[in-house]
Image 1: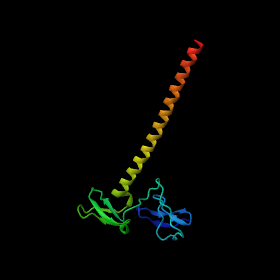
Image 2: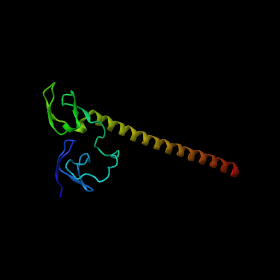
Image 3: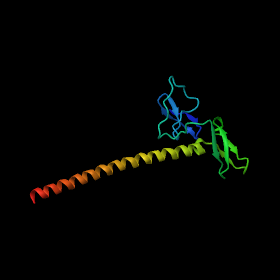
Image 4: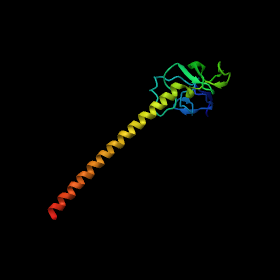
Length: 142
């Protein structure tokens, strides 16, 4: 049975099992109130959507004004002091999280580009060797 959780990413609802823990289905972060691990957990993988890092987040309001929020304030509804708009502080809306996601995407694109470059190089080598072999066969038989 899944328990209802409130996650720092703003999700409220049923949790998913994550070993002996309860986890958020959105960001895969361990839910508050779950059992504590016996040993430290390894760092989150690149594909996890939970931000890792600062205890202060810069989160823009719906109108774009940036507010600084402590980690313990995440999940709370706040009012922007500049435009009086109410919104929920979510880690996935933070500037830091977006920058981290952009960095991870750039790294993934760089790895993909390097892979394609290596494949193109080896394909060019194969084509060049094949051309030389065809020329040699033509000279010998022709």
